[in-house]
Length: 283
Image (cartoon, rainbow, N blue to C red; front, side):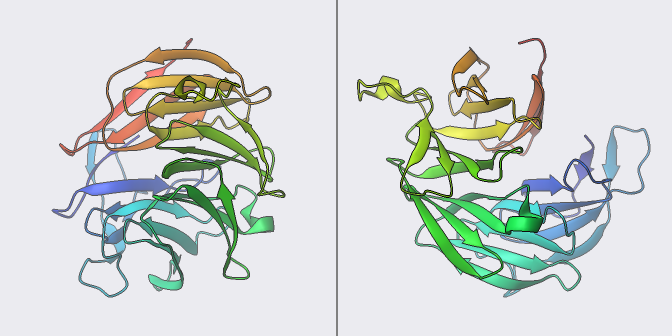
């Protein structure tokens, strides 16, 4: 991972590179002020810090920019001529990369915390959206409509993550400490709630605190979840049972998890503007 010297005085809140299967040249960055920029990563040396030039940007004063913090940003899975952003201003935007203009906009009732394009987006064109209300939403890019609401959480939904192996399976996590696995072909019935039991008590939740990080490993064998108190759980992607858990430190800020097998790292954009990487091997 390269430490970027961002050519702006604004704090960068969310950064995303191309999908892992792509050769990384450009990097998307969304800022606390709602602005968006694309950075050139093609030229770099072996020094630990680099300053990368901005290829294209939309500043905070533009009517194209979000009016609040850019909470999530992502390239289209199969077409880098398209990227998506979501914001605490209650919107999800679909952008034309070449013109740096939004070509579609979706309005929600509450702040948007995260969104995720299905890994099979070339076939399905579905975006899952996590908002501050207790529902997750599915948006169809082809029809331009909100096609489904997923009801099951008792508080705001923070994370949405698609299974990398099954185009119909979506995981969501929220402020209620729950992780819910959905089959999107049947929005009324969830597949399972991780950590659930028949007691109905708070102990039945996957975590005792809000879950701000959720990620399937690339092979789909495991699901990793992190909460605001620093507790990390490893779940079986097949049985959805908890396999291991441990505590790191109390976490603040936006979480971006990269996971391969049982080795994973997460990046935290913290209030003091520092980025931290934690790697856990042989857990």
